[in-house]
Image (cartoon, rainbow, N blue to C red; front, side, top):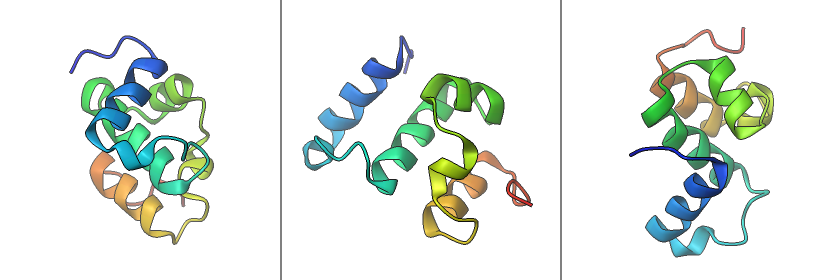
Length: 82
């Protein structure tokens, strides 16, 4: 995957899962965007935050959420929110 911009990543997500179209405010959508961007940008929290425009807390909603745990696991940062 070669990331061009956030619009490209959103389009890719919606092609992979058409049910995501129109769900930009849902935690699952934001989580998928972060994970797709991380495939190219790596586990760089600051770069991912700049690229997506999401703060790390915004990605998951709360520290204990399933989405937050998935992102922390994927990024290899189990203490990410501590």
